[in-house]
Image (spheres, rainbow, N blue to C red):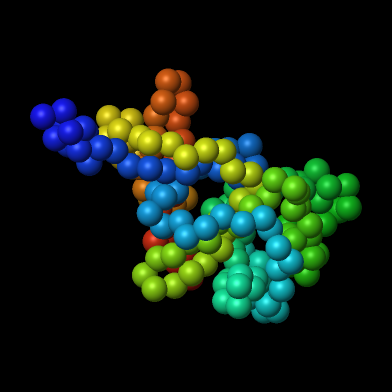
Length: 175
């Protein structure tokens, strides 16, 4: 009887993995994650959208990599450097050369597998795998039609901390 109860409880849980983008913590449902790797050399692809960093070779498979911060419009780490060098926000040639530079030894690429395609997302650091119960997950209340809400699938709440669980469809949308 105890095994049946355990199985019912486990069906209401999801596993998510949390990571940092700048000073903010986010999470992704683990079912979309194929693997997590240290940030390798990324080969830039000219004339792509600003959030597309380029491609990487993972065991012979070429995988595009997007910068989750740029895609989700999260404050970049090099803002103070940008001010010092007097680089404008609209100067895309300087932004392109700068966007690959903020890699640290904690930077990781999360390889996502979704709808028969693989895409890597660059994150600043990994945190942990979390088993979240359905009571800890809630849907965000839409207070505006702002496009930033499309990246949030749900909110994970533990103690006084809230973590946005990313909507994979929005993150990988090429529009």
